[in-house]
Length: 436
Image 1 (cartoon, helix red, strand yellow):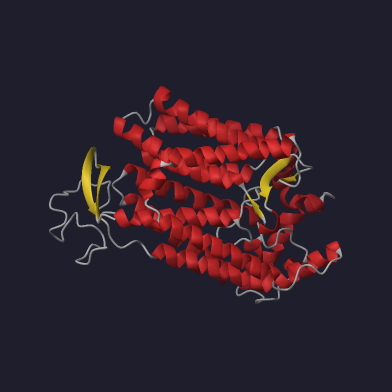
Image 2 (cartoon, rainbow, N blue to C red):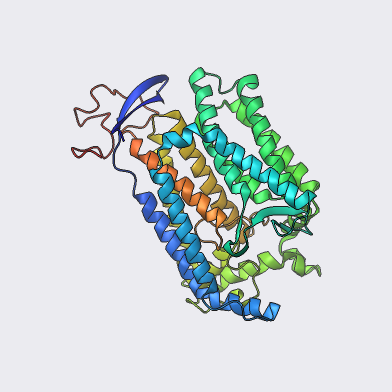
């Protein structure tokens, strides 16, 4: 592999070719991701036996052992680490060249799921919820399941990064006919599959956060940005009012604690017990293995509600540390975005930032009652496979691209002459005498 890349990037107000030496990647991404994965594994070990007892009692079986969820989480972590390594080592040029194919695979998988689940009602292939109307996973039997919406999100990430990068170089990022309408049609098609057909508002919001992050970094005008916000808000309201289960969630959220006194406590059961779990943890938590809410009181204790269980187990101090780790990881992604001269790279990492940030914000906000429940997982901590694997893969891509950052922020005018011969401004970060 070559040790240098001739990248076309926007530096200040100029688009110019920049020769960037391939250097040491940002290993802080690995550090923070590893810490989060380890914490997720610890919490699965702590509450796995309690969760197994609840399920065995509910279904009258002894299928779930005390280590079942710990072992399953361990397998998911292995797949996630494999995805990270693949995306960190597979040449980004290959991903870039095949972005449209990846997007088509995601769209095709969502279409196939719709046909198998909503039209043919093939329960052996499609896993559905909400009375069989929300089919979101392919059933893989003993291997578990896979959510095609995650493939679609990754496809959108790498394809839209290239599409917007090309429009930026052409000076057409705010052009209605050549940029906004084609991009709107693509996002509308993805929204149709994820939010309308699969009835997955949480995943849809994460997808829109990816697009919003790339558009913001891409430099859309304030007028266009305001218009997109208005369109998004109107579309969101339509998605809510046309779906009974979303109306119920929003109504429950607006009722707040009043539902406890209105005789409709069951409607707010989930969020009430999430708050009880966080409050019960106090300052330093009840300790590993002592969670009460994990014994069957808090729904989705190992999935969407794992933040609340961690609050009960590790307390306010533990939750603060977890949020600080997420914050540090997000700040590293922002730093990488700011120091990448190539437009595709910059937009791709910005999309990864939006992906991760949307999951963290939506999940934590739902658990503390700030927003309605969305069913979004907490990245690298929640029990499960598909979401963890694709987020780890996206972080692997960001890790690889961090090899091509430059010393100065690309928002500043920088002199890149003789980049390999001196240590001053323009020297690539981590560049040294040793060649990669």
